[in-house]
Image: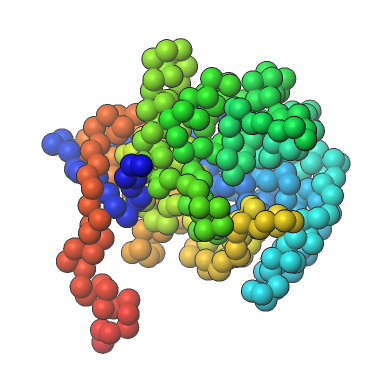
Length: 377
């Protein structure tokens, strides 16, 4: 047994040198694709639609479309989304189980991907291992640029006597395109996924705002420790092979501080759900639900109302109109790097230092706390 740490328990120590935040470079690369900002919108129906992906690409980031969601099951997904949004809380889980029981349609998969490609954007799509072979081939044929193979827990060594498990090594070779693998939280599994051929590795089991995996299954590792362990695997793998496999911290971040701490922990990019669900352009219109919520036998998620805090442009690059760290995330990241004298993300990995500081958000904040409780005039 060992102690693990989450975002609220650590803080970044500023450096001995600082630099101009306007001169900080926060670009990142996944596979053969370079992105001006290291932000990825997660493959959730309340977050990413084809239209949202176009807007995200415009600002230099990446949005992942869920190929097992409503956009590939229904000709009119907007009507389905409105039904989910309007449902009473006690009715959400059975409603989603019913909605996601509709078969995925091959022609819609092809149509959606080709439609996004026609907009001139980099297209990344997501699927689970059970549907990866079929959806992977459809994605490749339709012209997708990146494929994300994602499961609650993904390993290179899955065992079953009921079916033939997906061979990750062979799948990636057959795809002939960059494949992101996840999710994992340990050094050993991250190393396995890199050795299988992953172009990037997703880190995070159960930290998402709409995910209840930790409550239902009791598994997971706090994100700071998980990111550090997987980043160590990345660095060791690079020393052995000279192939750099980016680490993508997935979930658990609610404001700019958490995002900056993820990068200080070793992340190359971050994948966010509730943060982008708050955008005016998000298909959930202020509602967000977990990918495993519609599971027919063991739902692991919930629908939450996150509200809308502004347009995607304000959330990503500002100008910020709120003081709670939910807008101008790129500006916050650049300023955090500059306070440590880091010129880019890899430099931040080298120059940043994390300390254990569980009281960092509370120290000296008595008036902020009083105001949040409605005690101040």
